[in-house]
Length: 485
Image (cartoon, rainbow, N blue to C red; front, side, top):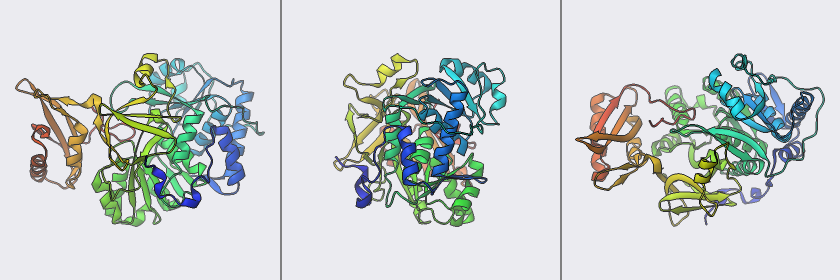
């Protein structure tokens, strides 16, 4: 089997050990990178030694507040240095960090707190008003004790965090991740082209998403990087000019915004040192990779799920395999059964919170995770995601059409910004509909001609029977994926 690590510097392979808990990670960081810059924002810079100290002082505060190890603690707020310190403190104290998205409304929070058995909430100042009627203690995000407390003796199999997932369809579920799963995902995220050391990253993806917390944050810390913490997209370009990142972790929608700004204002708006953008959470259009190359930036694709604690695969050969999500990471397995990708390894989640039926349905009898993704693996070990099983359109002629596969053809066009393929009914029969949002400045006439041209390149059974031109943005999830109704 081919592995993602194929292009890494030989002298760096194995230079970072697999550490199975966040408690062991903290000890490792203080010993290996003590005086290097760990985190920064526009107001504050923290070394690795200081990061470990602040996490220890926050553990002490948990103890003095009477928080019992083994309980669930909610972390509620936007990305911040304090949120990182609290995540490390909560998990190394032996509690489970329930990562509550900042977009949650007060009434949703009121229901989530008892359901997830949250015994205390750590909100930032912006979120505090939402907790007025919440009957659990609140600990301010900026609070910490004056003296440090040792980490608890947590184990690889202990529960570390709960993340919400619902993809772009369905009701959100609480994904339970162990220390071992999170740390395997964090280690995998250090495997990058060239050197894994000396990188500067910006963490703008929400820490309530595994891609944001694990790949964008913990993987960066694992390799001794300088991680600039960005609270929202409005601050992104100011942060890029401030810290001059070498690597970005992004979703394709965010990368597309960065590309358009760079086209309009020049590449220096990206900071001047950016070399790599690693994209996941949604398909990466070929044109995104091609257009960024003109600025000397390589866009790399990856694939993963919340249930796999980060990426399953990564593509370091986009020039040879432009539509692949790459080769699998070490210490895990993947297979395709009846068209569905299934994976196995110690990066897998432990189940959905209080949902044994959904947990059982997620696994095969022999312990493989059913990803729900249609996929194929080529002879070189490169993985290709074709679509989602539950999104399949079944036509009356028996053909099964993957909407994502149809959309991929249209995303290659420079005239089309976004598109969505779905099922409609024409003359009482299921048919394919495509909604298209053109790039700014493209006329309806031109985009209509473009969709007609592309349609003729598709197999007849995949050709949309109905084209709808949109003039407003699609509704998107927090990870900037179009929500399928």
